[in-house]
Amino acid sequence: MRYVVFLILFFLFPTFASAQESLAQEISLPFLEKLVETAKVNYPRMKMYDSRIEMGNMGVKKAKLSYFDILSFSYLYSPNQTAATINPGLLQGYQFGFFINIGSIIQKPTVIKQARAEVKVTQLEKDEFELNLEADVKKRYFTYIQSVMLLRIKSDGLLDIESLLKETRYKFEKGEATLQNYNNALLAYSNQLQTKISTEAEVYIAKSNLEELLGQKLETIK
Image (cartoon, rainbow, N blue to C red; front, side, top):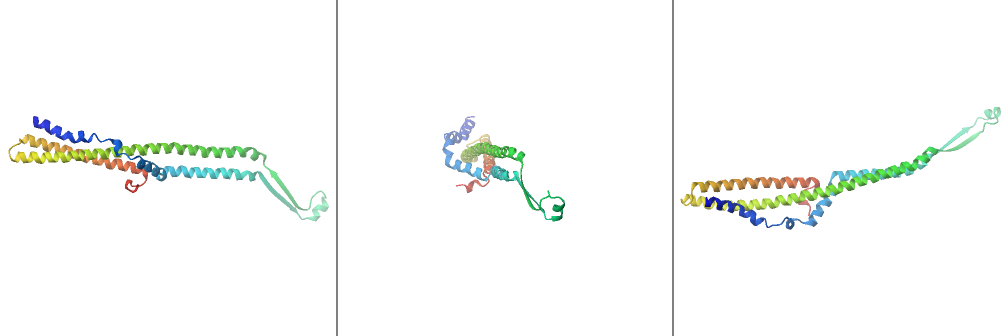
């Protein structure tokens, strides 16, 4: 029984020792800012918003230039002198005319205002998404760092359990440890190994989730 208690304490000791490590010590704020900026540049939806804003600005310019559409020009050429002789009131030669679309004059300011409002709405949507993207990058970065720290703790614990297993096996072969003690050491090692493998998978998953927002490998960002 004492041996089992000792085994449990020995198993937990690396966790207690490493627990004094702070997550804040592992976090690099300058590097985190680089990650946020990288995501803002690479994430497809950010590019989509930029394209929509550009299209909106083009729409505003087009609406301003369409002021010229309210004016129309026409001309009429009457070369037939005989018709003029029969009807003296009929003019000969070129006749020019300018027409102004009053309805377009009234509607044009509203059209321009609407185009500008659409650009503003798109910009606000982009700003909102940018804030959400920044929060997601930070959250996934913290999760990744947490997973890395846990993996380090589990790896150290596995080394300690492995040393204990070797010692127990040596004592068991010399008859200084019981079969139950040896089996307990094997079980502790097996459990710690499984925990390490699971934690290692969590590191890869957390890294992949972070890179999904970054649009490139984490190692390429310095």
